[in-house]
Image (cartoon, rainbow, N blue to C red):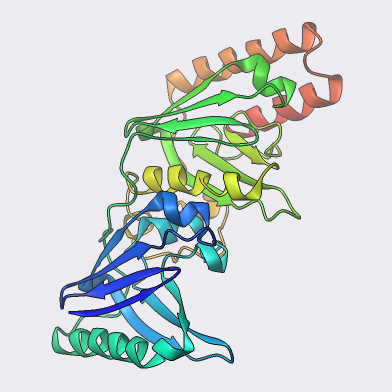
Length: 301
């Protein structure tokens, strides 16, 4: 057993699994404490390095692309302090850190773990149900449905449409950008119906606009990860693997053949236009908002 215990957390390697446990110190980000312990199977590891620095060092675990739904959902956008695969190491523990890294490297070599992208998720992601209250509302996921309940400060368009319920089979992908404290973030659930919508997050009824506490809003990555873990693996979408941080092409470019319009889509289109018309007549939507939203809906069909 190779183990290192630091204020930020503990890494323990038994030859098969790297068990990462967050520390309890108040300096450990809320996201790490909430995400909890992560058991990383050796087959999910690409490499490990110890990076010595002036005042302290850092252990860094790199996973194979496509192995972890957390990395897939967040696209490398987690702040360094919230990244569970980095461990800050005190200088007097640098020897132990090097030993842990060497033990993992030796096991990777002996087991001949491949470095190419994984064809399935090798980590399960957070357990469900999971609920997070953000600046724009409450988002919950039970493994089958996503539900969004808007807050009193949400845009009036969102509040007028009521709670949003999205079934997993209707989802194409999840898009997540953290609230940095300087720029707003968002959590968007992309469905086949809304794949071409260009509505900004603050008006998109399928997106949470993250503008409040960056510390709390970061927890929406839990939901993004839990949903991503239950969607088809990226390697199955286009016949070849698309890395989490690769530039996202428009769906019309990624899909070889666009889906044929279905009769039920016509009914959905009419229903959505009817709802928008009612909101416009009631004064909930301005003329500009109505025109932009209507155009986005029509583009989606």
